[in-house]
Amino acid sequence: MFVYYLLIPIAFLAVVAVLSVGLYGMFKGGEFNKKYSNKMMRMRITLQFIALVVIMSALYFATD
Image (cartoon, rainbow, N blue to C red; front, top):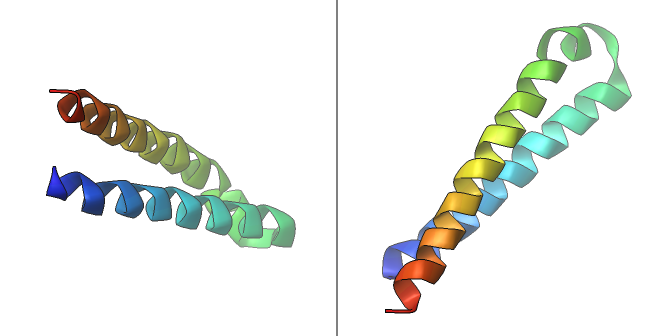
């Protein structure tokens, strides 16, 4: 169970970091936005899925 105390904040921070960089790129515009905007949002969706799996598995194993 200890590993979940590390994985949940790491997953959360990864999602927030990718979301922040993606939003910054969209507001700034320019070449970075054209090149990485779609990739950053796809990465955000993937990281959100991973975070959800980690949280749900922590809840599942905590109920045993």
